[in-house]
Each structure stands twice: as C-alpha cells, then as structure tokens.
Image (cartoon, rainbow, N blue to C red; front, side, top):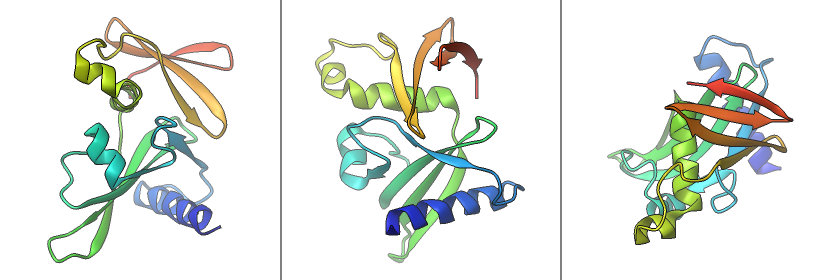
Amino acid sequence: MRMRLFITLVACTVSISHGASCQEKFTVVTLSPRVGEVITAPARNRFQIFRNFEGFVSAVIFESDNNTFFAKVAFNDKYGAVRDTIFRCPLPLLVNMADKINHYEALRQGTYKIGQEPTILTAGGRAFVMREVSGDVRYSANGTDSSASK
C-alpha cells in the first residue's frame, strides 16, 4: 500500500512538473526483472547505471499516456537530505540500460554486445520487445511494430 501511494504521488509530481494534470495516467516501467520496479542503490552499483548521481538512493521509470518516459531519481544531497529529480528519459537510453542489466555478466566477459538480442521492457503488465534497427529503436507490443526515437 505504501509503495502504491508513493508511485501515485510521483506520477502526479511528474504530471504537474510537465504542465499536465493528475488526470494523465502514468505506468511504472520495469527495465528488468533483475531490478524490479524500484531500482535500488545496490542494483545501481552492481549494474553501473545512473552513475552520474552522487548519493543515489533509488530510481523509478514511468511511461505517460503519450508514450513519453520519465525517470524519478532520489539521492542524498551534500547535507544528507534526500532529494529527488524527475527528467525525461529517451527510450533508446532505457533499452540500453535494460540490455546492460539483462546481460551484465556476459558484457563483462566480452561475450555479448549491447543490442545483440531484442530487449523486453514491461509496463502495466504489457511486454514491449525492443530492438535496434539502423540506429532507430523499434518496439513491438500487442502484435504491432512501431518506431520510437524518444
């Protein structure tokens, strides 16, 4: 219950900070089952994602109704207070992070290259199969094939 309330509040914060009302629907995106809906500091350190945030606490990825993706990152500021920031996250970056998480050990061993296999992201119980085609990210969901350069 507490996590659902947190996610609802974050979704409203994202809406308001980007000029939308809380009527817009946001869905939590899971980059990989290996990290779940909330990316914790140990997962961030293990998979070396969100490395540009000093004092990283956690991150949650959201998709809006209009297929725009946002990341909410919580971090400790220099005084030890927990702060957060919300920013638009391009889909190719999310696909790259998901691919890195899913194949981290093979990447470290040099037996896998980013984009070698399709990547699956989940949002709201839907699975999106992502693959890069000629520098553009293509995704399939519910039998449709689309392009996204967000």
